[in-house]
Amino acid sequence: MTLEVLFAKAGQVRTFLAMVLLGAGMALLVRLSGLLHRRSHHAGMATDLLSALLLTLLMGQILLRSGDGLRLYALLGLLIGGALCTAGVLPLLGLIARLLPRPKNGSP
Image (tube, rainbow, N blue to C red; front, side):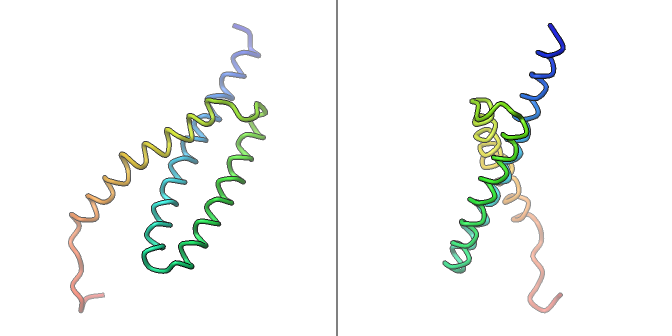
C-alpha cells in the first residue's frame, strides 16, 4: 500500500466522520424546528431556513475540503448521523428529561 492510497483513505474517513456529526446536528436542528413550529409558525419557518442554509454551507465546506466532491460515503455518513441521533440520542434525552424532577412554580 503506497502512502498516497493511505492518505486518501484517511481523508475519506475524516470526511465520513464529519458528515456523521453534521447529520446528527441537523437531526437536532430539525427537532428544534418542530418544537418551534408548535409555539410560533414564524419562528419555526426562520429555523427551517437557517438550518437549510447551515446544512448547505457546512456540507459544501466539508466536501470542498475533502477534494473528492460528493461521494456515496459522504451521503451515507450524513444519513447514518441523522439516523443515530433520531433513533438513539433524542429518545434517550427525552427519557432523561422525564426522569428529572420538575421545579415547583414558586421556586426559581
